[in-house]
Image 1 (cartoon, rainbow over the protein chains, first blue to last red):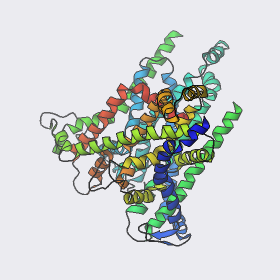
Image 2: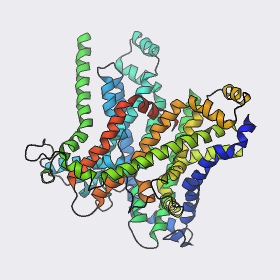
Image 3: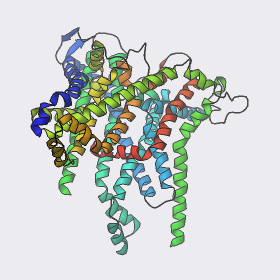
Image 4: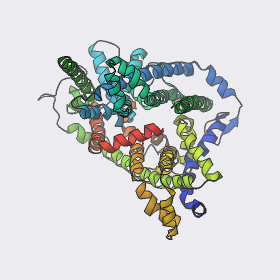
Length: 283
Length: 280
């Protein structure tokens, strides 16, 4: 049977593979190459070695974007997961209207980043101006916490769904046995519930880490990197290096930054893979 | 004991209730303000319901649909999303079947590359991808689906292969022995079994495509075509006065179909999201 299918590869594999070459492989390889070049368009590229990387690594804007991104990723990962887990706990405790709450909390997840960004920009700016505080675009600290609030609003529902699924898969016998043995509510939580949802915690942590690290739409829409690029995250910094400056050198710098960014994201994913694998062995 | 539980439960309910209001409020606020006429939309009165003087009816919506180009943007978004999702579902499910059933260099290499592509951030490709699309003239809403098939193939193939490994080989063998060629076997035997995964992948890809901003912004011919996220970004990104009323009307008209879709097929959406999360 394998032979029969193998003969049909032009039908089964070729369309996807051709599109994949156009939409991924070719641009990826070209992007790698161009990161060593000075170019304004792809045809006018001259090889200049590692100069782009040297610039990218010495660019203060890039490093401040990195530290903003890192701080944001840590804060959002912790807050999103803690709140999502608490809501999931509450909703699995046979509370009235659990389904309605679940529906409401998950809803923002389906709205796109740009639209979310503007909704919150309007709302937060109204609140800030009523409190006589500077607007989001004028103060990077407010911009930071604005982004955190926005991401909480968007992602708590998603993570909550995963945690609910994890909590519901704990066998009822475990909980009952613990209760009969006289375990208190907090003992049940820390000794039974949390260890049993560790796989969900791993999944959610890495989802929030990568989402935070790669964030672009929300950043662009909510603050646009203002004031003076202070609230700019890495993806937006790369985008601005590419498109909001004229001059022959910037595109090469942008591409080099993109490669560095890509390597960081791949490293995070490799760590994730390793952590997930080691869990599987234990179980 | 029972009484204590009751108070704890009602505190919890109250807390969740407040949280739920916090979750719904931003959209409600935009809705309220989208019904006011332009000069009444100020930061001081943003939290007040429209009154007789400030109520503008659907004026903002009419303006957004026509003059601001929401109707056309909606049309293009729809064309792009539907064509890309159909193409992705069809092509990647076929590709995934080949990858799971055939064990040769081609299938192994494809799988590794697809998984790798899921990790790579878009910024890595954005410049080269948009110029490739330009050169191949894929910069219209009717042809951009080829780019999306290429860039979105990773997740779809990954999810399909994950599920296909659990389909018993005997069913396909029986069909082949009865004289089906692989193409017929795929469409009459495999595709029906795949239905739950098809729905999950369909939902994940739709969520991504409908909301995607940067790829169409860079790839499409900007003077001719806008999608909804691009339109909303234009409102704010352009210099000078921002037409707040029509902008909020646009936001509401973007969010409303999503909410209706969500409420009507919530079960599938949550299932799809869970499947994607566990795999991804």
